[in-house]
Image (tube, rainbow, N blue to C red; front, side, top):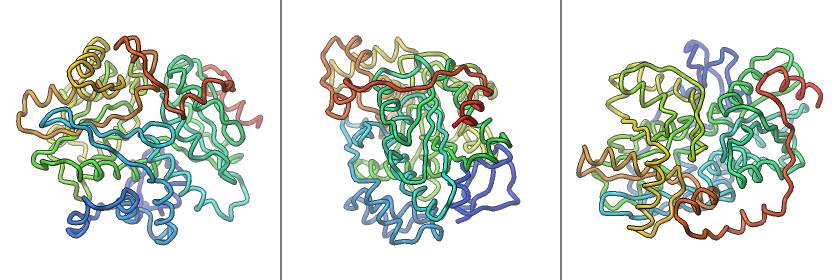
Length: 431
């Protein structure tokens, strides 16, 4: 498989180059040159396949020949060693729980795969690989866990001050070792902008081998296709299947579109955002106008300029009508989110985190206009990661899983900077 930049379709690069570079020099995004359909025999066996086998069947289409088959199979067994339970809400609505990995968020799929892929591709390199990553919450913890103590790789995580939950912050600031955290006095969009600026800075490029672990890196999106196939396999009625994705940076939805491109029979996608509604406004015909993000209780989706929008445009030939045929988007307010959290708990006894509640609200809006559809809503993080909000809204006590309980006694270590790129550059240059 070869890859090209969304800003230059005439040059092609290897999987190794796309992964280790992260971002093309022209500030585009790497895209696969083609999407090969999975075989009929794959779908016949899908229901009985283990997660790692599903992952291997998908990922080999995108990683070979740069990753040998035996090595890729080993990586998939290590990376995808947890399940995605499908929880029934009613006869037409199911929740796919993507939070059963080590950091209790869907980002574990991408981070665990990427860490092992990069470790293999980095063998023989004399200069350390420096991973720069911006996080609005769960990416930072997943990347820290996935890359912790990986030889030859250091990770620098930028996160917005006050923009992540307390437990999310502990997950990304307490590892030490090869993991460094930078607290930015700004928004996630500021963090993302600073990371992109670092990639394009000639001084830093000369000093470091830089790559990214955000969803701007193609190696984050490829493994995220796995849970689309796994959850689809568990769905009893596979007619008119609709995936609803709580959306911020739109990497998750882009991975779903990739899955559709290689054969997943999805009827439609629903993008559910909070009040950061850049993409819903675009899909309503009002143009794409990035703007500063607004803080909400679904903080991981507080993104005003989603970086994967360029890939979405590429998949649909920059055609708004084509995108509208495939995706419907809804914006959900904090009050609607809280109301949904309460209703689902009272009616179903199910505890959803704020992001999942946004997804359920978006799905119900779509279902009311398209009865008979069968929906899978992606529940992206364990509700205990947002314990303050969940307990306040539901007025219950939420027990902490062991992975989160152990964080309580740990001490945050982070370097505080402003949102001025020069401060990040000075910090990196001093290391």
